[in-house]
Length: 345
Image 1 (cartoon, rainbow, N blue to C red):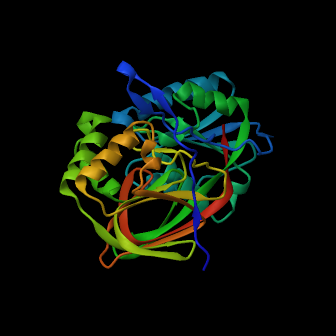
Image 2 (cartoon, helix red, strand yellow):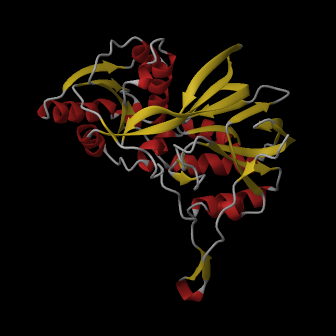
Image 3 (cartoon, rainbow, N blue to C red):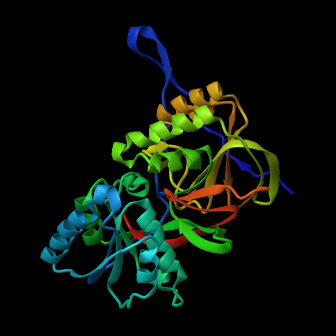
């Protein structure tokens, strides 16, 4: 078995800062989409708005009203669907009656978009080959929207009206939920280890807003939990003790942290950053580097790889996170589906 594809980052660049101190500049991110895609223009007639009313401190409905007004003013027909509980968006999208000129728009955060994509991919008519998705940010983190340059609903609506489509990779995720194998389709990230621990803690501190992510990470570092796992990267086994696995389709995650600066959503692969067992002080130093624009990529305790398939096995079930949502446990399998979705950008 050949070695997995290791990612090599450009050499760090230093500059003189305050009082003559030298600091390392953050790594330069790769473009979210490559420049090699053939442009496709889509003529939108009707938009199905999938709205999560609980996203972003319950601002989903407020954003949706503005989106509706903008689309109607632009002579675009709309149909609205409001989710009532977790996973409701999956069922809604699976049952949509789609005709030529239709678009499915997700109004929520990364978790809502994951559900929309999952429902789309679970349909039995291959609708994803013909119909595009649109992303309207209304969540807390909005990592995918941030990396696409969609900072608010106006930009999102503008991209629908412009009609410019690009193709995007996603990951087909198999995991265990309540004793049964489940499937989701990830557009952003899959977390395992300290990242999931911190996210679970952060969910209990939602009233703190984005600050909750930092607090969750710091508390998880203090706890210092280490897990043994068998990690298969394109079939190559790494059997070790890990602090964290950063599995990314996009560059950013969490509180818009640059987790994988070289990740692109149309390169046919996902990126994984591996942090083995190290001391709490080294983990804290690494977290500070991560906060400093992603300079953790040059930390000697981190390895980055690019993969098409990934498998994580543990002796005991351990929690995972898919696109910001804590859901299910190991064993975990990921298969990258290259350029399988069309999305407005």
